Each structure stands twice: as structure tokens, then as C-alpha cells.
Amino acid sequence: MCKLIMNRKVLILGGGGFIGSQISRILAKRKNYNITIADDFHKNQDDETFTDFVKKNKIKVVKSDFTKVKSFDLLDKSYDDFYMLASMIGVDNTLEIPHEIIRVNTALIYNSLEWIKKVNISNVLFTSTSECYSGTIDKFGYKIPTPEEIPLCIDPIDHPRFTYAVTKMLGESGFLNYAKIFEFNCKIIRYNNVIGPNMGFKHVIPHLVERFIDKESPFKIYGADQTRSFCDIYDGALGTIQAMECEDAKNDIFHIGNDEEITIENLVKETGKYFNYSGSYEIAPTYPGSVSRRCPDLTKARKMFNFNPTISWKEALYNSLEWYRSEEHTSELQSPCNLVCRLLLEK
Image 1 (cartoon, rainbow, N blue to C red):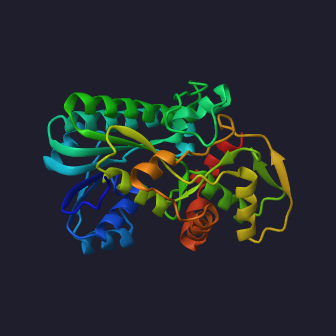
Image 2: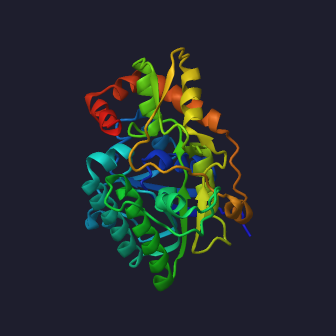
């Protein structure tokens, strides 16, 4: 049975991030939710809109580096729900600083698990990724849309692109096994390409925006025949909350995403329409380490907690493009750091 749960004390570790901040905004609209956001706030620390939101809704904020064990001493000793979203993410980061991906994400996972042992928490949710089986589809031909039960597989293991996925596999195993031993309810969410405003500048959408702004011609489409499915941030955050608050969802794994499968060529040309691009397109090689197809089977989430994405991939894409197109964010896209990142991706 899944029902709306009231009077909840909620901790969102990584609550200043892309998905975490959206979860807090949804929960803040409900009555009787006591919300704490814990983060190092490297992303939203100067965001006046986010700061105003926190003050208006009387949200408790704990700013610290949670890769350090002592940071957890700043938190309370009891919560109803613990959303563990904190991690270092971004394709560019995996290529530039894979050692930091491993260090930061491993520390956040281990510190969280050891902290849970010492406090009173009823429900824990750990966010993972569909990249955990990036090698499964290509190597073993498992079906698309892909269910949660397929084996996890990374190939090649030494490619820096997969350092993020490897840490998420560690987290899945860690949280599920700690849950059995220390008797807390655990849910794992595997996100599938969640997009939207404030997503960051180290992902496929902002790189497309930057290239269209630069008037690249002919416009190269890398991995044109590869497929993905894109989920709007609101649907992704709401689905995460639905999973957390479903009483029947216990120690299980769920996909959160959209099952509209499209090609990268569809994505690029739709983005071109938004920018009124009139030039030509050129099919280009696939990025190293990029999988051929990805689309989630949402059957389990639909059945268990009625998850049903309502925003189409095109609407989600346009919401994202509108945000990146603003003067403020366009200037950040064209920063020297992001230009270097783009060159790394296009090697």
C-alpha cells in the first residue's frame, strides 16, 4: 500500500544539487514536513533563488564536506527518511578527474553507511544510475526496455568514463547489505538521463547548446544511431519521493526515468530546431565508452508506487535549453574550463 505520509522528518544529503533541490521543493509544498538539506553547496551557494526558498520554507541547512567523517556529527540523531543523493557526477569529470570521482563518491557512501549504524533512521534511499549495466546490453544483448533485474556489467573496466558507475555499484551493494544487517528499509533508485534547468555544465545537453551557440557547421552528430531516454527533473524528483514513501517498496531497486526511446540524432536535430539551425549535419564517430542503447522498463515502479512520467522528452529538452540559453548561463558554458572539457569529449 502506498499513501501520502505526513509529519515526516527528512534529511536530503546532496540537497543542494540538481535532483536533491527539486525533491526539497516538492516536499516543501506539503504540510508537516521537517526538512534538512545537507551539502557542501559548491553549486548553489550563491544562488539567491535557492537561498530565498530555504528561508521562506524554514528548511534547516547543514553546510559541510561530507567526505569527512566529522561532518556527520552536525546532523541530528534521528530521521524518518534519509535521501542519499550526494555524489560527484558529470561525463567531463569522469574524463578529467576520475580519481576524484572514486575518492569522493566512495567516501560519501562509506561515511553515510557507518553513520546510519549509529542513528535512528527508518527509511533510506540511495540514488544510482542506469550506467551500472552499461556493458550488459552491448556485450550480452539483454532486452530494451531494460528491467532492473538484469546483471550489472561494466566494460572496459579501466575506462575513466565508468568510474562514476563503478562507485554507484559499490553504493548499491553497500546500502542493500547494510540494510539487511542493521535492519533499516532501503530503496535503490537507478536514474535514466534526468534533465532540466540547473543541471550543470558537464553533460550532453549543455555541450549541444554550446556548439549550436558557436554556430558549428557542419554540425557533427556523434553516435547518431545510439538511443537514450530523457526524463524531466520534476518527474524524476517526484518518482523518487513516491519510491521513498511507498510502504510496500522494501529493500528493492527501481528505475526512475522515461521510457520514450529516441536516437541521439533525434536529440541533436530537435535541439537544432530550437536554435533555428539551418546548416547541415554530419554523422560522426561515437564517443569512446558510450553505450549503444539505453531505455528503462518502468513496469516495477508503475506497479509498486504508480510512477508515471507526464512530461515528454521534447518538453523536458526545451525546458533545459531555455535555461542554458539565458545570457547568464551562456557565459558559463563558454568558459575556458568548459571549452577544454568539450575538446576532451571530441577526441
